[in-house]
Length: 504
Image 1 (cartoon, rainbow, N blue to C red):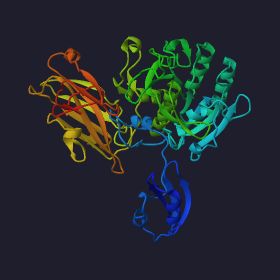
Image 2: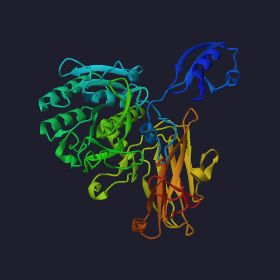
Image 3: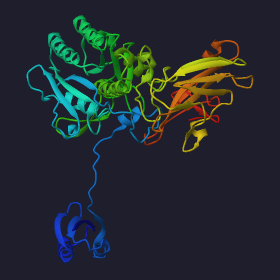
Image 4: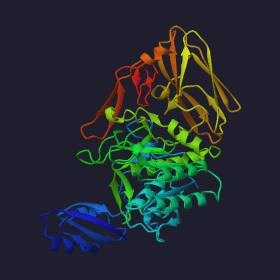
């Protein structure tokens, strides 16, 4: 048996049509407001037979479909070096087994979004772990929810605090429970604080204790457009402070009139998707919300991925790696307000761009014309080979990155050495290069670095100005990042690179 959804003309006599359809099967529903009738028929009945009946416009088989009730642009942005975004979320890992302590309003762990997630109830200020506010449930969905979660295989430990009205003493007790649990097992873990309170020296001292014990503390910058240094936990220099951006990489207000905008300052280390992001709420539905809380939860998921991929690194090293791996100068914002805030956009580890070398990606190496320079990179992940060759997408090297003839490479036992010899024909400028690595499974990864070619002084590199533009189509669907001009395979800014004289 199968069911046809039948659309009929508004001027059709429904009683007559229903009677006629009943000769072919069983009418299972009638939606007169939509001019649709549902008809269950045997498998032998063809849709063309029903469409031939007077008054019928068209027929569709009522097949099973998958309803996607949300937009996961925040996931796609994490694996997209530039805009427009990639269409597939393909991280290197999903935070497998890494513990994230969520200090929030509780978690309704029985929701569909957590049907494949691991939620552990660790601590509650009142003995109940359910979420009467809704904030904690939404943050948890962003960390390890099966649909909107960044790291769906991470373990979220529910640390329930009185989110809307609390005391420093209550927060200290919750942090103490986190510390006691953390010390029972080895490994770096994450603490997510999607909230702010007025500056507290006691609270900051407890957070430092957690960090010294091997925990990465992620904190929301706050949403009131003030200096984050006046708040805790984000105001602590050693905490990973997070601001929020939208799908166009803009740091803008998400509430009309400017109410609701990321706080600023040097304590805000990184920015992440946080405006109009889909989350699961405590009513077992999806909704779109905004705020630095959202951005912090996303970053916590990303941190767990870095921990899994780098199991020998300390908490401080993981935090530095997350910051150094971010995309720089990607954000469009009011520099009068945010000039003291680092312009870094979070980026996770994704297939094709895994962290391979001990040197942070996008590092600039100054090299002098008519001089031979040697650059050495040591692998921090297991690979079988690495080389400096044309990096290709769909077998087209020009669209990705073309190798320069004045650079050669050699690879021996986890170390690649580049020999760089730009002659007088190489124009002064910043050049983007890609090292292509292959792991034991045959997967390829591309690591980007910059070569700054100068004539007599490295100061020449500081004089290179790169103009940047934001272009949005009339439907505000696509953002294109271009520059006025570029050097061949040179640094195009905003994470792009130049190929054949054009920025990609």
